[in-house]
Amino acid sequence: MDRVKATTLREMKERGEKIVMLSVYDYPTARLAEEAGVDILLVGDSLGNVILGYPDTLSVTMDEMVHHTKAVSKAAKRALVVGDLPFMSYQASVADAVRNSGRFLKEGGAQAVKVEGGRNVLKSICAMVDSGIPVMGHLGLTPQWIHQFGGYKLRGKTSGTARMIIEDAKTLEKVGVFSIVLECMPWELAKLITDEIEIPTIGIGAGSHCDGQVLVLHDILGLSGQYPPKFVKQYAKLDKVVAKALQDFRREVKGGKFPTIKQSYEIPPEEKKKLLAELKQRASS
Image (cartoon, rainbow, N blue to C red; front, side, top):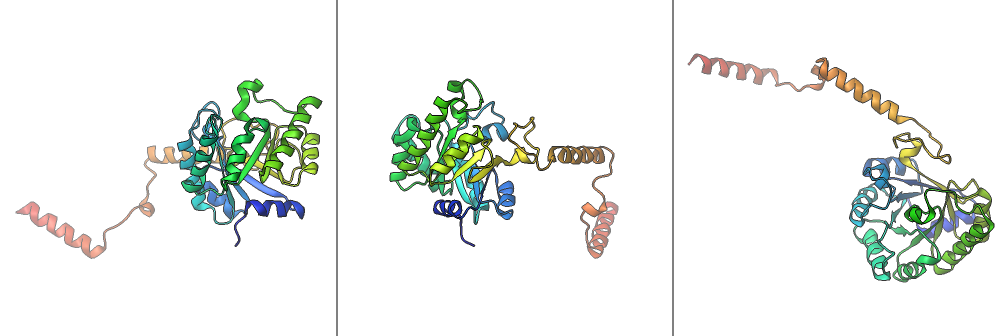
């Protein structure tokens, strides 16, 4: 079973095979995604919201990202593992960008990193690529820039902003990124970008014309604890299943119905007989 590589994704685009990517954050869910044949496991900085309970992605640290990437990498035998560079891990300096992206590969076991932004982060991307680190780009709604955008809003609605995103996509391709995530933009814009660049695009809220799609695992399973965005399709509602299981467990423990003899261990009959005899002898002496 050959591992999916950055070069594999370009080959998939050329033959028209859709790319499947999921955001996962731990070993058990990564193992399930791997077994399902998912092509890319993204350890997204969305783990701040989904796993760590932060109000946004900005609070996630590099150490937290590496920690979770390690767990995901242990489950991935075929899938390409991509570590998401968190806020301020690459913006301050080129040296930070190279050092922190290198940590994903060296400590986290990832094979690539993802960076948000276009022309504003080109120096960092070039330095990472020159250091032998495969880089995935991210354009459109980039959550690390929400304070600048004024919130989680659709990007590329006007001709001016759409043209800027197209130019950024072409520039990212020129400097060597192997694919680009297109988030929360009109499908027409995503299609234009997908048709005009040779590297794969992976959409999230960007329509069906991208070369692949990504969603957060907890969103599609109904485990995120919040109403999902418009672009999310829930394939299961496991929150209800889990809630019922936990309520049943509590009720059975409170009612003395768990554990039963089935969930209990027993002393072998001969040893039990010896033990009772010894206890009886001690009690009578």
